[in-house]
Length: 510
Ligand SMILES: Cc1cc2nc3c(=O)[nH]c(=O)nc-3n(C[C@H](O)[C@H](O)[C@H](O)COP(=O)(O)OP(=O)(O)OC[C@H]3O[C@@H](n4cnc5c(N)ncnc54)[C@H](O)[C@@H]3O)c2cc1C
Image (cartoon, rainbow, N blue to C red; front, side):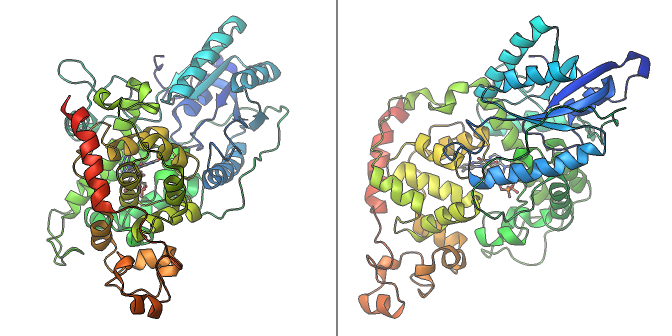
């Protein structure tokens, strides 16, 4: 569907239509919300709607408890913020969100329904259904580009084809987004206040979310504050700190993903802040060496790298929109006949963080406890599952779907297919991460491992990355007998690597 142009200023009163419904999906914010802003500018009154679809929300097979809680608390904050704008947030529970929206439109006598577009195949199917069923009722449906700065076919190669490799896409993207120092997008403020608060029957704003605590405060205000603080204090070190899991709590990374994916902040707000930082980022190399002893990157290089990560997010949205089969099939066709061992015992050990490889186990336990996992660990854990344990990336992707607080189908599929070597820009099939070397490099003192794997707390730095190498008396002294207190490795990495390379060699050559 074509996005209508968003409105920057309210229509004069005599031109405004009566009532619009704005359908909140993953855009839980009042500021810089394109469809909400436009609905308020063009209508006398706006009614916010959120449909609880129990097939997803509160279903532990589809949505993780941390994400559900993050959403619920963000929605509660949103409801209060909207009330100040005379916009009610009406909740309806229905397995058929389109039916619920049309019923609400009837109840409040709405002239139109607005929403911000999403790019996942299921969401697109729902949009089409809404369009089809609203038309005979005389309801106008307006969909806006909001969740991406450049969407669908806006960035194409010179020969008008879809980019399937990130680097040239990024070059084209940067040329479009920032030509002559002018950014190609606007960050909007709050929507116009509705002239009256419309009342309608609402279900309670609640859904089951499990008994978990969040390690980040949800909502719009907290998201904006995190963005501001990261840009002011941390982005200048991003390039040198982003790979170290222990630095995640100290500004090594932004931790913005849950906010971006619930839409409590917009991609434009994040990109705008990053470009502002770039205009005054120093090109001088800091005096202090990087953690690994190498020359540190300049603040400018770090800020550019952060922008690049935000562009990955855009890239994966564009890929999923144009290649919807990648939800369950390889992006690269030549891997479509690859088979997987899918050993249930191995998969279970991986999910539970009991593989015998400390960095993998710490990563998986971090995921279970916090609903989040550091990017470096996502790569290590995903590659271990697909290559060492010969388990399909689809199983891993689904497990992350129901575990992550920041689950996003486009980024998750992109990350999993990268790790399995089947995606765009994928890791070459023969370059398989060694979990012990990764651990030594990115958790050199084993602090992260000890934090999440208490059985290994007594193990010294020399053995923490490969504890099975401890002689028997050292195991006893460390209170960690391998096979009793902590598992022996469930596979031999070197043998598994050879098997994986042999399996991928033939399809890779096609
Ligand atoms: C197997 C696997 C699964 C993943 N699943 C998800 C997912 O479900 N949801 C998700 O948002 N990200 C996913 N990622 C990407 C990345 O791990 C997270 O975006 C990142 O860890 C979030 O932390 P942050 O906000 O501190 O990131 P930062 O490093 O601070 O980056 C800033 C923002 O850039 C974007 N970004 C960063 N890295 C990537 C990337 N590799 N791909 C796409 N966008 C990126 C995110 O929006 C992120 O919030 C996955 C990566 C892998 C390897």
